[in-house]
Length: 59
Image (cartoon, rainbow, N blue to C red; front, top):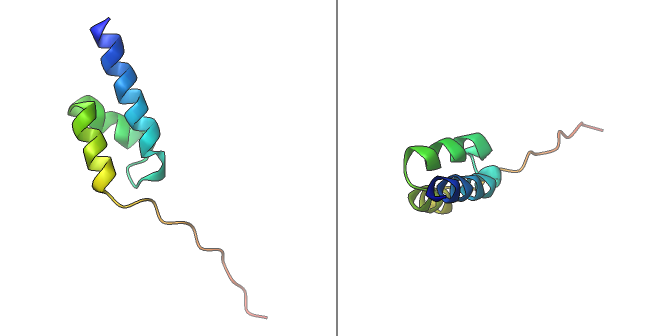
């Protein structure tokens, strides 16, 4: 049961990482490698993923 709770916490941290530079897989790997609490703190202090700029054509 404890392993299930740990994996669930890792998954929730990974979902939080979808708007960060790490992405979902990077956040999942990070939370598995270190604890989900520390991975959440790392994601919290990192910058969000930049929005893609639309390509402007000259008129």
